[in-house]
Length: 136
Image (cartoon, rainbow, N blue to C red; front, side):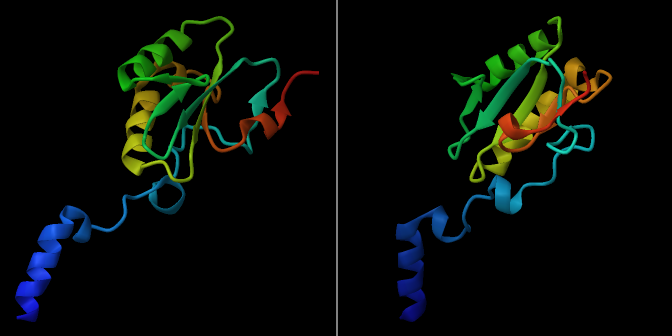
């Protein structure tokens, strides 16, 4: 009887009952790729910044504006064509889904701007407080 009751309860709760909470950036995601800069490397003197964020629902923002994953990829490609070239900073929310973070990292890793000399792609929190490096 207890076994039948348990089956009914699990059926009513759905798949969420069998799976734990969704993996999140702060608790579960892998570390950023080794090619990405961090707060420790700072921001280049007079380098324009473009911040990409990922919220708790996996939504992406580019420079504060909501974008689709397709638009994000397009913007990353175009950023590599700008002069001066901007520093792209991925700043996921601590509760951003790992799946979304990995998808965005993959796009960044494949982009020419992130393969260029220097640390043009970075990841971390609160980039406005990162140290400025280089320059006078």
